[in-house]
Amino acid sequence: MSNLRSIALSVLNKCTEADQYSNIALDTALKRNELSSADRGLLTSLVYGTLEHLLTLDHWIQALSSRKLSQIDKETHNLLRLGLYQLAYLDRVPDHAAVNETVVLASRRTRGFVNAILRSFLRANKEIPFPDVQADPIAYLSVRYSFAPEICALFVKSYGLERTEPLLAAFCKQPPLTLRVNTLRTTREALLQRLLKAGYDAAPTPEAPHGIELRGSAPTTSLPGFAEGEFFVQDEASQLCVEALDVKEGMAMIDVCACPGSKSFGTATDMKNIGRVVCCDLHQNKLSLVVSGAERLGISIIETEARDARDLNPSWINTFDRVLCDVPCSGFGVFAKKPELRYKDPQKSTALPDIQLSILETASRYLKENGLLVYSTCTLLPSENGENVSRFLDLHTDFSLLRERTLTPDEDGTDGFYFAVLQKR
Image (cartoon, rainbow, N blue to C red; front, side, top):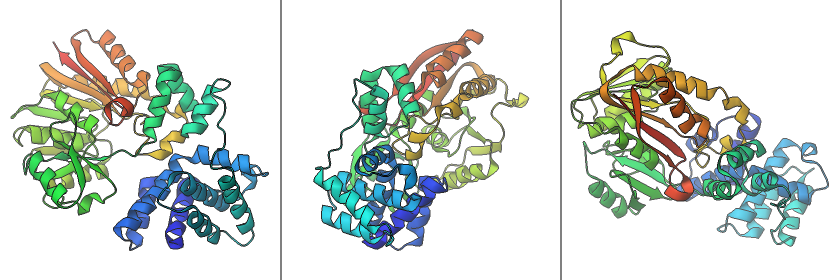
């Protein structure tokens, strides 16, 4: 078991010190180590769980230590985070085992220090006070839910304190793995029964007509039906966005920011693989994943082109029945799946609304009269969502807003997501 924690510590060091993406670092570790299904699940929980609670764990370390966090070497710091995470959040790991297995990984020089911090946490009954919510609500939210103070302040400004807290709390819950059934190959009922028979905790998505939710940890490629191309991974919010396009057989559709391709796959299957789906992305290497994904799913109507979505292709003007504009965004709606985004500086995203508007304006020129355009993001920041759509409509009076929707993890059980359906008159 200490080997498992050693692997987790190595991944954490790469994520916090070498700025590797958690999913890439963890995936590499899973491939390099032969682990049972249970151990793969525990390793995933150790890595993602610790990363999701970094600021809470640091608050506890600081409260229990006479040293400043900056005075603790990086590896010992991550080891303390890993140990405290197990004590506070993993019921299936006994306290004594979590302490002993963590201390074993410490260097001789720091072993006593690590042991003392972990046992002090137990003596405190695992209850270290958070900052007072009345005196400093931003500090409270930041420490309680482990989000950068700047992100907490931004959400409070946009949604108010009363709405922000349940939102952040929902981002701390493990989301299900959501599949979109490939209706070219099977039905939702058939795939659902296949998954249940294999012992998976599976259920239909509440709203999306072709979705299945899976609880628990399992490699996607090992699921029944993957090799046969019977499904692809797509959050329910994203599935509802595709449904809003209302595509029909024989239509021409363009996805101007397509990668990794799930929305394009959804439209192609809704069109029964009859028509034309153009997938664009800035990077050619990413589009190769769309091509291979389409092959696995048996989709033949997808074509790809590498291009900047802001650059107009004159030959496409007024030629598409449907346009999907799923723009690059801050990602402030997928914290549960990308824990490093919790600590992102919002200032780095301030240029995004103008970039998004530029993409939307270019994409809108590809739409035929009476066609539909869907603008979408996986963020909950109004500046990237409704406010941006309003800016576009003020500039383009030939477009009208048919409907818009914001989905949230606490109310809808999905990623934080926004989409608006626009029609060209």
